Length: 544
Image (tube, rainbow, N blue to C red):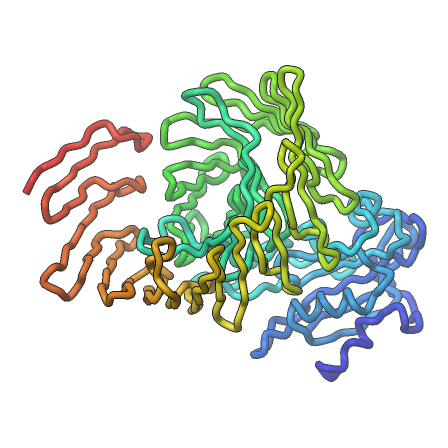
């Protein structure tokens, strides 16, 4: 089939029905219509232009099984595939896809039954793209793994039903790395809108808290205890609480991280353990569910799973319960006298969080007003009923505006092929240029008029193969150089390199903890000792 004449292949409703296939994959129930939708699945890896060969099937529920009415194929990039599906099937507004868009399902507007355990009634008929709902294909034979783009340094992901997506740079990517965040806040490289909301903080001495994280790239909210592992015989994908993703290769008991990952993952008798650069330890069971979080302070929380709830208890005896509704969405948080209830709009997006305590109730409202994609967060109304934040997006879902009430703190983002121009609240512009290293964008230069609010304008940056910053040159030509250990930890930093004023700071690190043991500066040496949990127990300063 000609790669560029495939729109007709995707316009399934306009085609004559063909003989039904005898193949039946997932279970289903009828409701409204028996011809319930379309499935698209990447059956061949991408070619040199990034196009996959997609198999396209019109599906029906018959005898409790999914069967095929017709089938075709087409070559598309993942973004082209999804946009063509949306524009070609006007009566299938509900779109479901995996993160990297190598598998998608569209449900007919009149379908009210279920497919593979997913009830159509839980998803309102609205122009909406839902991510990660289906575990895999419902008609095509479910493979051991979906076709996904290779991950630099690791290769094919080889994961069941999921593809890794680019996420924020790794923690401890180098203290000299320029920030990718601007506005309230937006990632200037990818245009992601991030939002952090704190619903609960434990009492003094406890590290227990409940934080929600929003990422416009996946149009979803995650939370403190939603970290999980996706596991196959050869790979493990860590999805952290804030949505960061890291891929590991697995061979027997040996686990190897991708170049950008600085944390460690290992197999244990109970499942898995991840040691993060924050000096936290996450424990997972053999199915990849989070079971325990250990903090650098020595405190910890354990998770106990019920049918529709999670009980979180900490080392001080505090308890918090998370309850989920029939659509497996977070419905309520209870911690002592505090209760937070969560309300969702007809598209299944979080629309309100209501805190109730001591007879008082306060609510925060979340807005999703862009008709092109119901999952983009466009604003927040605070507990006083005042809308204090607003965001706007382009057709690709990249944030173009971030502002507070009355246009205060307004940031504008304009995206080029490999650059972003940021206009700050004072009207000054700065252009970020990028290079891709290890599959992630890094700032290679920042051009603009330097000011008190943006002293790093007209700066350039270089990186090593892991994406760790190697040199930073400011607008006056001063250069700082960086050297790292095999673990990706900074071991040497030289300021004003190559000049008589050069100043070097060297750092030695604990062999297992992400803690410095010795910092050597021109004027002094600072030595640190820690307990088994990584808590500092002593510090010695030696003047030079």
